[in-house]
View (spheres, helix red, strand yellow):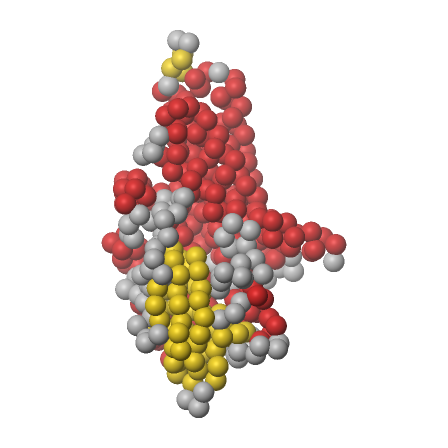
Length: 377
């Protein structure tokens, strides 16, 4: 798919950053499960957060295609780093589209320069794919709101300074009775569960956030009351493009590693790259990775042009790219043989990092349901 000169420039800049800064630290970040604060600070200085946030609000002011390009390049370096970029993109979109001037002024600069860490809080114990099942409530008071409930598997929960929380404000209205609240995590009543130790993307900090009689001012409400479900869902198309691009980055890193290894590893007196079986595996990784990239870029373009079929396109892209990342990071491990099964080898990490792309931002089963319903509507 055609990329503009601007897209190509930001791709080259991001690729250079990934090669020089991210990739050399990826193994250590995974091993230590360390939050990469110093990398995020550099990304803030380079303008790699808030790719689609308008310049007037401190963002880069580019389109969703540029966002997809950045996410792929960052993920090729290390998926956890790309995941942070994606989180900031969602929060920046929420604030720039639905926040008021005071909310944008208070929160956007810190999120975009990485001096503040945000969390996007939807999932609960009984509300994963079924968001309408959330139990967290916000009750109106004379001077604001009182928030009660718990969220789990929340990205940045262990380190968050601010949380964007979906809560029920009308218990009788189903998904039409939910609102979003911006919660300063230093407020009384906010507590955190332990950091989760994950299978992959281990540098990304994930855990629980608990809200016990948290008093919020009236201006903590983001967007219209009782429109929170629709607002959260409105940014998920961009989120799915981001995860699709992240998955492409994982698959591409696996392909590059497998090609290099296949040229060097010798068996039966010649490089394993000379064997047709290995060549076919590399060909399958390459063609499916390219197909996934084109689906992602097409979906991003449809976001940018407000196409009627944007939702189905984003679901297709995320679903296909996630499946490609899991299948072909596994094939990269296979090409490495026993060495690919050893902790500290890049393809072993890629295989672990890939799995979550079939789960978060809507499971691939949910994406297939969305696609099917759109086809039959």
